[in-house]
Length: 285
Image (tube, rainbow, N blue to C red; front, top):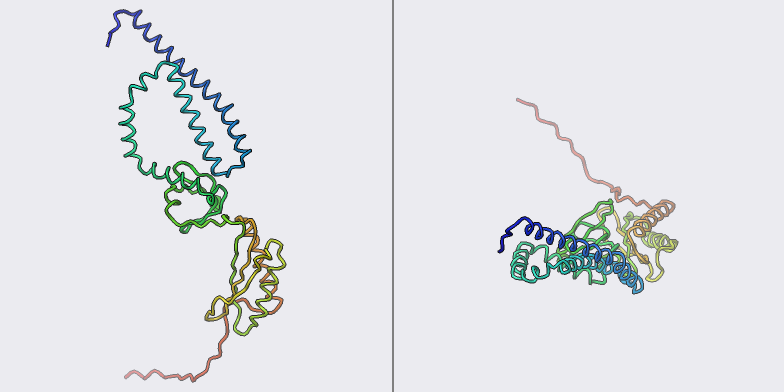
């Protein structure tokens, strides 16, 4: 290392360094602004033409955003003359990469899981999913976590590995969704008449499909009631359609059973027979 012998030499070296830093900042900003204002809108317009899935489009946009930033920094470094330093530091970067790899195994595993989630065509943003005892809509799929919007308008941050390694039910992966509703009638009521009421209520709802046809079956014999399960299908399901259709159907069924004098309560009266004997308590000595 050469030690400056005079103030002018020291000043010249600092001036050169400041010039390089200024050139680095200027080139980085120019390349970043160009990428942000020109490259990103161009790529996003191509996405709109290709009609990509929202999940894949969102992921590619994130990668593009990171790529623009890294490209701007790299261009600024090379323009300012820092390329030799970066090239000569390959061993240092390799050691840092190895250290980070050991320290961030969970992050890397979540990233890999996120890649598999993104490429799954049955796993998209705005889908209604259920896993374990949780449920909600997918609002965002990141490189490390997936954000779920619950039905109580809460946001759950779920590690990607959890969704990639555990059973997940996607209620919206198909074009139709079956809704089941179980009702209990008394043992003295007419099962055929109750079945017709359930089927007629389904037939009168525009949101319920005729194909597949609604069906009713005896689900179980409870201690106090015969349990009938009504099953029907809706198209293009989402959480709101599911809740509204099911609620309206239950209300309609309740009114029809009440008009037919069918008791939907699960209680029943049983006649008791036998003898009742009263024993007197013996007198104390």
